[in-house]
Length: 170
Image (cartoon, rainbow, N blue to C red):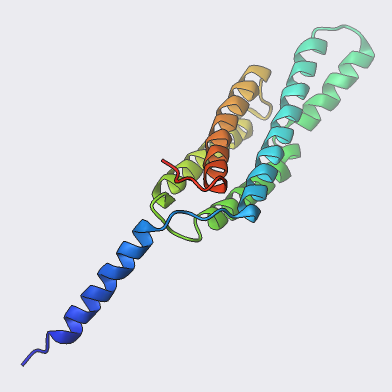
């Protein structure tokens, strides 16, 4: 005869665990918050550098001056994908670590966090893929990409500030 008591006990324990986890509000993690700030700064610094180099290439590229052409050649070298692979590798590593930290303690907001972090990673990968294909990026493309990433970081920052204040994120 099949004993239903252990199965019922297991189901009740599982249901209680799910209920407890579902009712838990996310807790503020100062380390995750600092990692978010650091990762956004890392992305901003790298993209601002690329944007600045692109502007220099555009501005000085038309000049017949030999020193300007030397500066353009140097800027092209610095703006090339090969010269920025470390930036992308380090940023990807930071995003992976941030994802791990922010989703380490599952709660009701975890699926939304997973989605937000995944979209952020996808956009960084899109910039990287475009950079690899074109070798250098135009200033307008970099500026637009930076704005998109900043909006995504802003949403994560609002999440962190919401839980820091003790409120439940939406």
